[in-house]
Image (cartoon, rainbow, N blue to C red; front, side, top):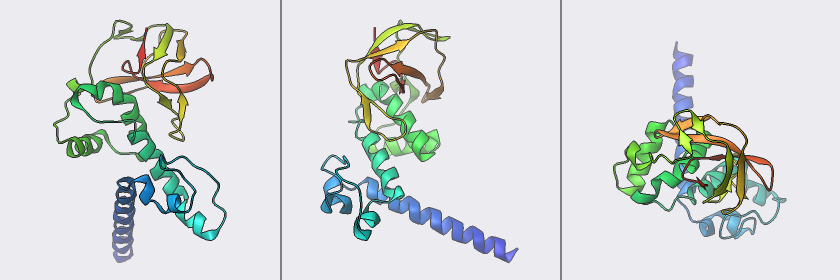
Length: 199
């Protein structure tokens, strides 16, 4: 029993260490990152060059890449009570990247915004959406859409997405449906909510 208890304590300590490190990096500005000082990323977090030296590789590890991707997703969220419905997709991607439960994500949002977050902030039905899903048709993006893998913008605001048949939600966050659709110009799959598209 003792070895198991010891392993459990070590695991919890490691989890706390990485959680603290994750949050510490997440709250730093891009200019404060060592990767920025070494010229690996620019002031917006965009990668400028591949890490080659040991110092550069230490400043841009897989862990850093994860944090930077989440940070880019968060940059899509200039928080404000009236705009929450437009952020459902970004919050869904953050949830997918971090594995945070919705309850934890809600408490973080409430801490960051200083507001109580209710599902009614997100629920806004549109005429092209029904209880059975998103209606077929061509839609225009009202926000840039990012890659669910890298967090990079891959579909620009104003470009088209094509929904060939009635599409059911692939997930729900804060009571809002998230759909997987095809971006016409790139033919890539992206995620949207009804706050990201218009007819």
